[in-house]
Length: 305
Image 1 (cartoon, rainbow, N blue to C red):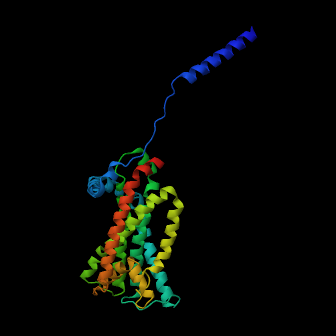
Image 2 (image 1 turned 60 degrees about the vertical axis):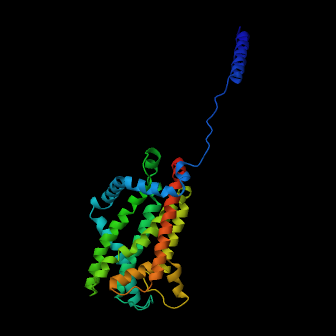
Image 3 (image 1 turned 90 degrees about the vertical axis):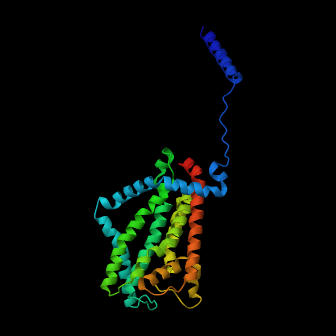
């Protein structure tokens, strides 16, 4: 009986396997990637991008308020830490220059004022880059689960560096007044002269946000390069006037932006209008390329999360 039961079990198993082989197999869906509507629009895509940006202005504001609340509203120390870094850096460089540890050329205003403004502007640049380049990693759950314009994350991320810059402006003008430097009415235009710098930082940040999804080490390496880039920008020293050192004023698009902002603070005439115009063009191109690359990569980025 036991042998008969075993034989029957084997026969049933073979019959079952035969039926499974003969039955039609369920076909797996084939995923074929094609150009989406965004890529097919061509030049008309810019109108769609700006239209989406305008539509998401409420979301951008709410995201900024949430970030601001986390940074400043819960603790008054947030305002202190917004002020301390540029002040400490300016005092340290001023001490080094006074004791001839660091040799720089003559500056049209007291060096501590010059270095404080330069460090404030540079930290605005790095703050916008760091915020926009890390926005995708910081919101991976939101990107994968919620359908919304992802551009809002990037444009909301620059709100905190801009707000921090406004806080530091108060300290800058207080130090200027303490040192006896009284800026004229043109000083009110100095923050607006930094728009090319904001565009360059935002464009670089959007490109690096896409690249860092594939490897975060690339973003860290480029961040370290930015620290070295401060030495190639007249942040803590006046723009060089002799060659070949003066080549930094032509190669580095941030150099004429800083120079123009210094001229507006001092009420002096702008000496590099052509280079400043070139910085505007470079900033617009960098911002446009970064925004376009960011939008084109969004479908693939959502899949990786």
